[in-house]
Image (cartoon, rainbow, N blue to C red; front, top):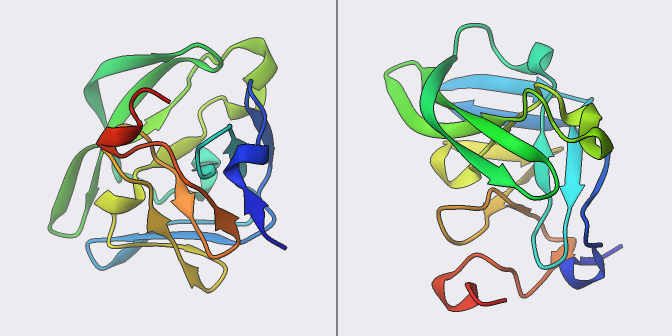
Length: 154
């Protein structure tokens, strides 16, 4: 079944991810989860949020800066360190999300383009264009997607 990002709601909907999530960086699996959540928002491919217990120990290092989402609240960032790789501000979390998104508390999202590979089951994910959004594009998701420079006014 194909999903169009233009059928996703605003404000966004948080739901369980029914697929196994795996993330690789620096020659290692840095996250592996069957309990992830996915955020669905109009014009965006889903963003995947992984429970903290499904992220490898010691790979997340607090990084400076914060950002604000009108729906979810204030995000904090992490560098991801794995093997010989360090990806600065490649992951984020909502330590105190707005009430509607309380299930997101401490879950971790990553920018797929900054990882060696991200997988949903056996499908390798393609990343959303741009440096701000962290959407995961799969064969069952259709756009057009927000993220590229020409979409900033959407």
